[in-house]
Image (cartoon, helix red, strand yellow):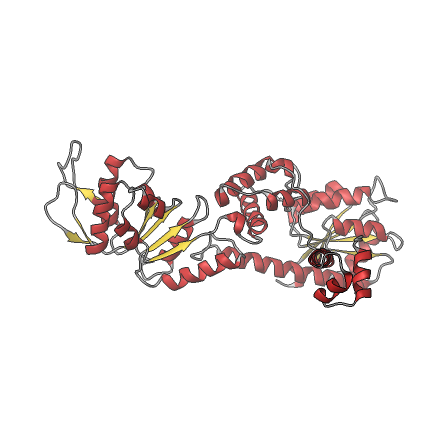
Length: 449
């Protein structure tokens, strides 16, 4: 895009300043607004990448209330716009306040053409980089692991293992609580495999009545039972050359377990009411939230079937055990739901983030999806607050500041050393590897006697 096609919104009520800035920025298309209402109208009409906003707008030309209110509404309407606020030379406090409310940068009068151009050029570069990142992120959503958002080392290792297992035909058993993403990983195994162009067929063994599950899996011949008016393929046969995902395999009835075991051993099926067997080539992925070893001990699951299904087993950790994933996932889900509903939401308030991080999420990702979908609908402001989430306020957690973390660790080490030395400062100092004066200084700093 040429500079002339780039748009800059100038929100300024002074006619002389409007002409001066428009003349200085002749390489850009400058759109003028003299009030908050005009600015919002021009934002909707032109959707500029950069906006220049004078904080001293009427009816408060000597203050910043109208300018700050305009800033909030501009960012709520179009969060990706880079807003550069214009302030008086002695009004640094309001400039910093505007930065805290989401402004990209500030420019202090008196007017200097080169400085202003440099600030605007930088804003356009950042806007272009962010747009490119959004495009890359949207492309990545079409990749096999598009439904998985994680930075947790354990989950990243699982993703790496999925990539290694996908090209093979090994039977994989996915173990984890409900809502942890077992079907997403199953689909990834299929979409990264040579079978990707064939069918992926999912069947929930817990959702189908026992008397219908066998016909669902293996199909039936015409006349096999009352109502069987034509030959019908089962899911295993329907997925021939593709992948079958058997979700909640722990709920499979014992009689069907024996029949599934024979299929896994021989790779042949026989339809209900049929008289012959024929081969079916499918990759089988199974999943359950139950403890299969406990089911085996209680006689409710066949041990030989377990070993057939778990040629490789992958245990998926619950959300509460994934380091940093709660906040990361919350941001990703909110962005998705806001886009689906065409809402301009700018993240979470600090207390909402703290509540998200502190909540145990017993329903895992599925619970978080439902919570944030509701919040994206119910919130009135540009940010999601704790009341929109319906979560309890978090108790004060561990600090993120490195100095605070070090102080906490040092204090605990001093306490432990004094305890192990029965209060003898010389012995405690030796254990800590410091001198006695240093230990006395630490004790004084931490209020220890």
